[in-house]
Length: 323
Image (spheres, rainbow, N blue to C red):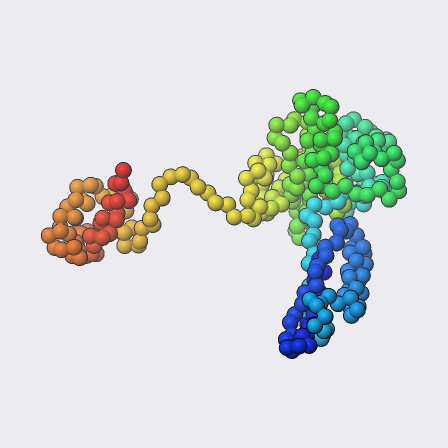
């Protein structure tokens, strides 16, 4: 968050009134809404204190308040920790394609998914999950207020898991986020993709702060959607290919490296469609133009009596027959 405070100042010498903006200071990242509210309240108290009003020099005096701007940057990557899944999503785990792991009250769901993927039992995976979390965060013990893990850290988690192992056994983490449409249909958005060369794939689902293990996404999902542009697919492989080429709402400039020609006018498109005129016909038109003068025109048969200028003829010739 950034808190920008503005007020009016009056110059006691020449009577000038200006709007003065305070130097904005950004806050740290907040994981809870109440923490952000406390920081904002503290900033308001500081700027309402008239003894702390910033001025260019002593010739300026405070007049009144002008406005306050609060800029908030939301992190697009959710934090995965703990929390029960809704019934419509929990019902999908009745088969073997999905493991929920949402009955625990700590923030180790991501590490439980890794432990189960490595062979631990779903009902005896806490010890292995704690060991993995302690090794990654370099902690002696896991406290009760153990923080959540952001999806931005998945690449670091992969590097930690693959440290000291052969490349052929490297694990890659892929994350999907399910969403439910008004008609009850479930759409899966690809949030984090992995290197296509990796074969040991750990697929997790992320929903409202909880991570669950997906063993077979093709059996679980029917419709996939891009998290950037919203384009839908019926196959997971199609969404993976699209994830690498999606522009994500950014402007893409395509330079094919071919010859750039001036666009034809509507008149030229009618008179000289591409590939329909021969060199002999162009030369004949030029001879006719010279006989009638540089500004004269030639009437072409079969076109309804349109008029062709020598300028258009030469332009068309230069664009299509230049070496």
